[in-house]
Image (cartoon, rainbow, N blue to C red; front, side, top):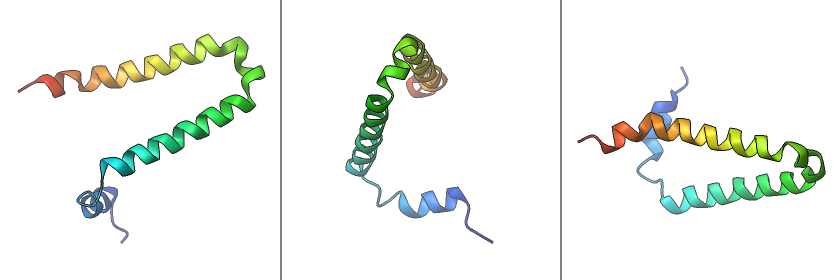
Length: 72
């Protein structure tokens, strides 16, 4: 039977570094900027909607973990 995602994570989390996470995030950001540049003319009319949906997604996740983070 194949290892679960939890087992994979437990195996690599001791080697995981913030620098690796930042490099991954930067890479994804650059891909997003590149795709956005290609689609700029097409997406311009709905740019406000994309911003609102993106911020909403972020706020939903932050609200979910806010209480857990600040509780003692």
